[in-house]
Image 1: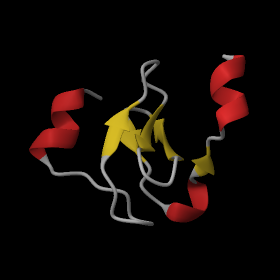
Image 2 (image 1 turned 180 degrees about the vertical axis):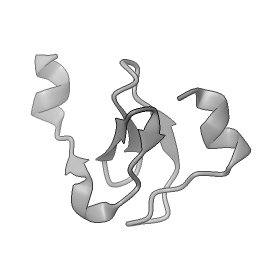
Image 3 (image 1 turned 90 degrees about the vertical axis):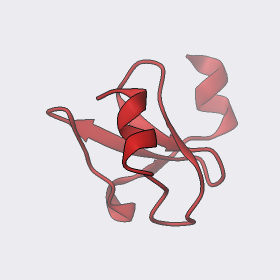
Image 4 (image 1 turned 60 degrees about the vertical axis):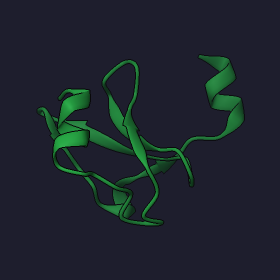
Length: 63
């Protein structure tokens, strides 16, 4: 999974239609608006709202 994939295919958050970016560790695609993180499994993004986890400020500062 690369950053180019998000730009090439105009990937957006299915929940809020916000802009997304690849997490630094490559583990998921994160929405910049609603903070949902969609997991990447076997190099395939799982852009399903029910599978997303909302990343809060505490989890970001703890890592």
